[in-house]
Image (cartoon, rainbow, N blue to C red; front, top):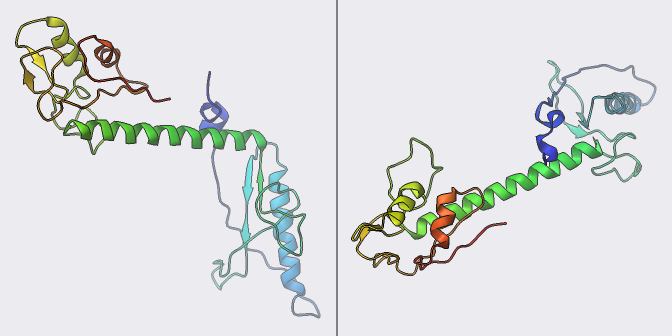
Length: 218
């Protein structure tokens, strides 16, 4: 099933910021122009949020400098917003409009990032445990050469199946003489299998002569 953040609407969305400078007329009181300008900002944010294809609206506004630069940006609170903080004198106006489906997609994306980070952390730790040369970097075709079981699972699997006396590898890639044994540095290290690992790694972990135990992330 396709995750919400992988839908076409989410993957091909575009976020734009518009820089708009406007001048409003003043009045008898000093604050009249400021209040008018704030109302215009609110109307613009409301109008944007009501457009059919718009799924997320946030706005800031404030006095402009000589070249139109924003001097004191302040979040715009508007009536069409449905999330974010309100102002104490206008509790019914919030700071952000967020389409419910888009919000769920953002949550889905955040969850996917969290799972990916957790897997990277787990992969880093299992590699460190056996002295992998690529423990601190993502493994790519250009990674440092390493013979450990996580860098060369296919080769480790082939060696395990060969049944040739004296042709056995420890998890770290060192040659050993007895199947299922480990070198002195990694005798008690467990073979850890994560989601998305090659089938060969899962097979190695399930072999009777594998002294380590398999751990599967969720």
